[in-house]
Amino acid sequence: MSYPSIEPYESGLLDVGDGHHLYWEVCGNPAGKPAVVVHGGPGSGCSEGMRRWFDPAAYRIVLVDQRNAGRSLPHAGEPVVDLSANTTAHLVADLERLRLHLDVDRWLVLGVSWGSTLALAYAETHPQAVSEVVLLAVTTTSRTEVEWITRDMGRVFPEEWERFVSLVPEVADGGNIPAAYARLLADPDPAVHEPAALAWCRWEDTHVATVPGSEPRMQRYEPRKRLAVARLVTRYWANAAFLPDGALLAGAARLAGIPGVLITGRLDISGPADTAYHLHRAWPGSELHVVEDTGHGAGGIGLVETTDRFATRR
Image (cartoon, rainbow, N blue to C red; front, side, top):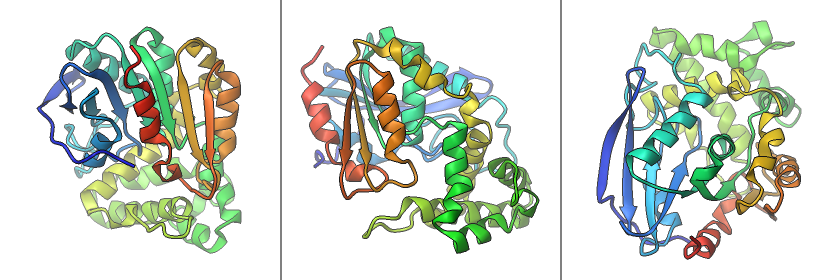
């Protein structure tokens, strides 16, 4: 279920410092309940379909492309780009700066996949600015989760994993696989970074598109977007989201009193349901919805129903 396509009534580029300008847009009802979408990736940027997760008559819907992603500048797909000012702390501060720029008192924060990690970090840092939190395909980007995706998953897809690590043989038997890939992806030579970006995206498609009917998506991105996503994913995964391990679970108690809904697919082996389960246990009053027979993103099942439920809550 989703609402009909709509267009933004306002958009712009927000200067957040460090040479970064973030693309943002607002659609729906200018007087409606504020909500912000925190996209996945990292690096994928927002899509038009994300506007359709909310009743446009009830919500003032904010979409924003994170640093170096989507329509934000500079773009991580440029041959040479400085990513040093792109960390979770920077992205949390960016969301808060955008909230103040748009004169929003409190907003519903909706995060998807990597965006659930960032949404959670934001909500724990600025709970006074959050009315509700909705997380789809829940992740916390812990070291254990990164090891699961980049190394342990080789037990499920052994042939694909061997191809994946063939570009970084120095860490095949131990070491930080995302960091090794990040070094290749930072090389300005297309002969080095383009094969690495394609190999990374093929591996991501392997562990994400696992449910019957799912189709590979990331490897089909145009080269500039493929490089941007691969560079940003490997940067964040190599550094476990620049967060102390377990920090988001430990901080979940700060969200007591803020309604939270966690939606995950039972067959999501890329982001197993135990992540959402442990977060739910640590977050007083949160709701956990494990959707059977669905994979990463849970097919979006229950998402619009959840935003509808919160539409009149102030």
